[in-house]
Image 1: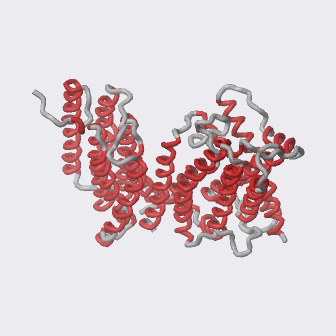
Image 2: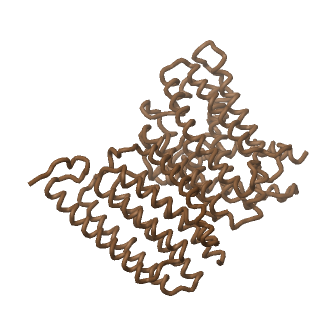
Image 3: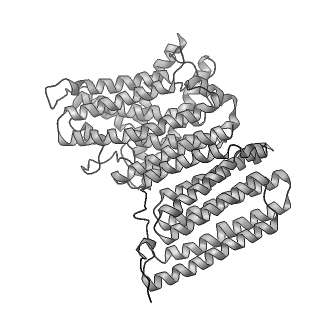
Length: 312
Length: 218
């Protein structure tokens, strides 16, 4: 019962937190550039406003209408499975890291399919770019997770995190540091932040995520925005937890769980602020240079595995 | 081996390798020289931490020497060459950047497999990391054979030298001071000569893309 409740709260926290983190990152960027910027709650308000509107759709097919739902539901399931606040969540057999990866991948695949379903030039272009980058980011992500799984000998997230909690010195091991670095690069690519994609422009030459969602409006757009924000919140919280598992509740007492939620909020906020500050000082990479960045992430992840095996 | 020094050796040894591979990633020649400086500092950290665990004064002196030469004098000399030609980039390496990065990952795997018996020579945590030195040497060779600019080839040569030094620190806890001194001076001499050569080549030809040097000039 407690497990189910924790998972439910996690889903809600990831949804609200993701939207607030998106707003926070925009705010931090604006402040660093000397502007006032929109309030942090701006994405939340926009989603709330659009949820009441009807959705104009580009074509008669049903595919476009299904996409926002699939995106939000897969991300919500992943957010419920992953141990963010406490080690025990609704996944009885233990949340396997690969399940989480493929749930998120299902979401991005459906978004790309939706981009194609609108039958516009931009939708197709965005979908092809997103899939190309995703195909390059996925190997790096899987290898980095494998590197984190080497010390614990298991890809199950609760087992892996429990092992991390029991051996704090492992957090400064080279293998761990490299794996977290690779994960960060992959998260930046998967959530469409600079230098891979610029979330604040609609420039046809460069846009990736925005190109796929151009033809959405009303409730559909609200759900797509919510899905993208949940993805950001979930990935930041997950990377923060994997990097520094301190603060995870090992028992199911309400106090420990509340502490766990506060800690995961702090970790993802810190990560979000750091990413936003780095974004201020970086320019978007040319699309043809992005494979180099992702190849670097793959190499760093492979090094993490090899070093982990060598130094064991 | 104490915990902190062991962790420092681990991290610094991996940093030497990562920086060596990052050399394959960056195109900007000045960034390449900066990477070389970081690699020198990481190498000196390995030496210093090893010296601290073994209470070896000679190795401590070597660490200071490594900082002075590999993180100080050599990058500064090369940095002058890079600055004299601002905007110089490794625009068209023989193997493109993503492929050479993946190739580097494969080379690291090869080094780990080939270097596994090294651990049997000297059991110990530091010696287990010796394949990383081998991998740095291989990454340096890759940089040396796939880049066209003279300066990046010099950087490749120095990465190889740093890899060899890393292996000596990890496996034998450093060679005698006099040998290290000789090696460092050797490298310094090579860099001074190459720097002079690069300067002359640029003033005569205006360009140091080695592939374009096909015929003899008067």
